[in-house]
Figure 1 (cartoon, helix red, strand yellow):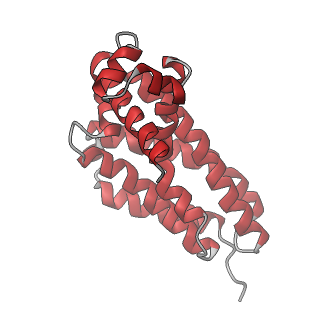
Figure 2 (cartoon, rainbow, N blue to C red):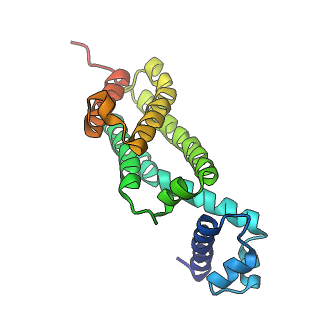
Figure 3 (tube, helix red, strand yellow):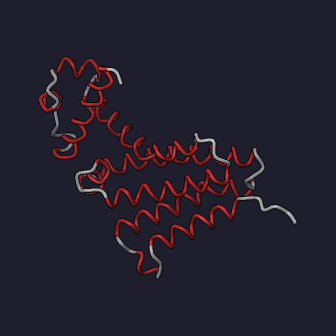
Length: 201
């Protein structure tokens, strides 16, 4: 990473922390400059204004959420193994978030700033949809996934994970008489078995 990249990342780290603790409206460019030990001139070298910093923070946080998913999609795994790894990684994301400390980047948005959480979540969901669609197209092109069933997967996938995320955050799994791990295993097997083309006997 170049010095310029390190400086930019430092500014974003500081801005994120200030936005989470003070709120976007109450955080000034001077606050960011002081907390990062950089002058205002340095900040304006990288960002035009506070709104641009805020958007960069949101973009970086959304990218952090989908980083594991992107790594799976760009891997050389066969389509069925890639889908399984993608689903496993998606379950890991929420479980790791819940287990993280209250000072973690993602959890701080959940507990302290719902509005920004929604912006991050919305952007992450849009990226997720692109990734899963890319993976499905590859599987269909290679004759591994059923094209009709696969076309339904992105919407079904999103609804399942919105429900799972909510239940995990609220600790609501007991009402289903299943553990989070049992639900995880069932969902993965169901989605894969639904779209994979079974070999004919």
